[in-house]
Length: 200
Image 1: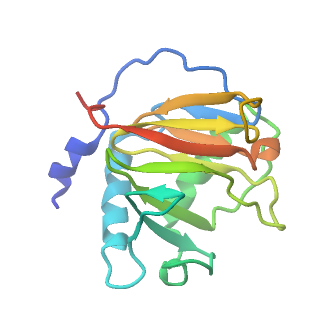
Image 2: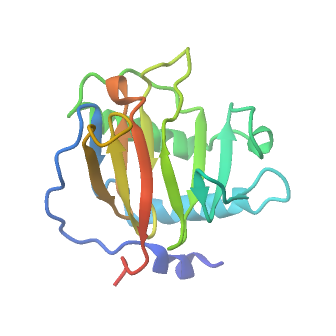
């Protein structure tokens, strides 16, 4: 697919109202990634994901519904993980830049080494069930950086299971970054909805 055709996948820039208050340790960076850099991310992901080995694999189970995934970095368990290859340097730099920006609002974020990357490809029918990204013993509070490109989605965060824990929903649009770490490193999160018409 030509780069010019991929521009249709980008979220148009617009002024957005201030989002809801998020739990401590979670920082939303709206429109953090410029359109050109978003295109670079799409092109790079397609190149890596369409390789004969180690690219995208289909996920459709109790946790992930109708989506494709690709794992990069030092993970060694799970389908496709051992074939993924290293995290591209430009992606590592974006993660570090995101954490540096988020640290201005949440100074408690510890340092991180972005050596693991998961690429999720959603459709309008995709869902990601509530789960916790298990921290490593080496970096128990290291921030997680989520970068959105393309369609908008509802990203839900919750301190624990059950209705007694308030659910915080933030709408992530193309170009947004979301960073959570420190005491929020083990927070429950999910993607219950992808907005199919978010480009209109």
